[in-house]
Amino acid sequence: MQTTAEYYCAFCGEPSTTFVDISAGMEQSYIEDCQVCCRPNVLYVRIDEDTLDIEIDTDYQE
Image (cartoon, rainbow, N blue to C red; front, side, top):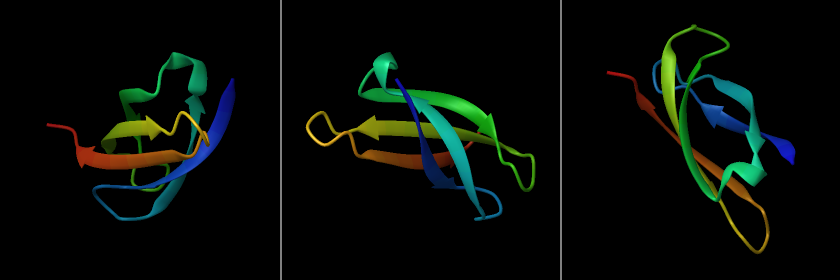
């Protein structure tokens, strides 16, 4: 099951929307380019098992 979630770019701070595949696990990490500045962000995705709320933290790709 896919849903969308918002994150803030680690470089420019602008919000972006991403698709999250809930069936891929409750903790995920992957790299996605910012939709505004095109720089790569490492997304750390956590999904609450009970509510399916999604929290995304970002970091710079090194």
